[in-house]
Picture 1 (tube, helix red, strand yellow):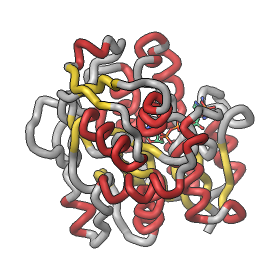
Picture 2 (cartoon, protein in one colour):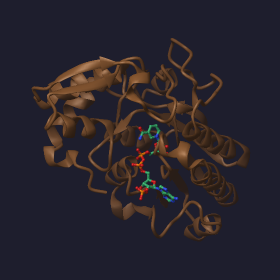
Picture 3 (cartoon, rainbow, N blue to C red):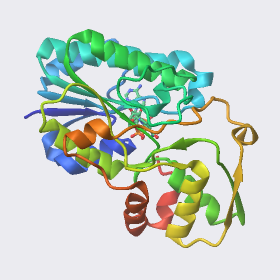
Length: 284
Ligand SMILES: NC(=O)c1ccc[n+]([C@@H]2O[C@H](COP(=O)([O-])OP(=O)(O)OC[C@H]3O[C@@H](n4cnc5c(N)ncnc54)[C@H](OP(=O)(O)O)[C@@H]3O)[C@@H](O)[C@H]2O)c1
């Protein structure tokens, strides 16, 4: 099977390459492959994959408020080209989407058939990407995930690790809840999903839920730092983009396929064992 993966330099893309094996993958990413290029559809057609895992995206949530046109060009129009190519080829498409398509007003986990109502530009651009996938007629699965971290690239866990090495007190938001997800676990479950005949939308995160503050506390504890973590409210964080206060994703559909992911705190403990402290510094 020919597997084309976009965003191979990112957190999830690199984990997917590890799972499938680099030699088995047709890799696509910047700078050679740009989702804003109008030739994307033809480029995919030329590669003739049987399966496309579209993980490449504009992922800077605050940046998307400053550059909404670029976020849409990458996440919506780029995805539309990928989806059109998949439909023309008869290839299977897996589009990686986000918990940020939801407004966060619920207090029970979001199910796949709950209505998206994004409250920031990033979430809106990813939702437009979802719509393009569904409208394309491709045999597609939209995989929504959340709060991703891994060895490659920038993420919350590495930011906390970095700050914990120099600051005695870390102030972290305690009024947003979600599902931290280890890129390695997500990649393994995506590989399992490729072996199942499943279409539509599926939520795929590590099990359980927490706030960013609780997540930071767990990082500090697992890594053995001595700093203290103090809870603050979203307004005190001064971020540009609004965030959904609650974006926990229901695992029910995934569980019904026998593909439950481990608890988020167990996944974090595994990550803590493999990530050297030096990796907390961004290297991309
Ligand atoms: N990170 C999260 O917390 C999170 C949560 C929910 C869902 N997701 C979704 O999960 C997927 C994977 O996320 P991730 O955390 O692995 O993202 P990531 O680490 O930011 O990787 C995204 C990759 O896409 C590339 N990219 C950006 N703009 C591009 C363009 N114009 N053309 C081609 N490639 C481009 C990036 O390249 P550069 O690094 O050079 O820009 C990077 O290699 C994304 O679809 C994201 O929306 C992520």
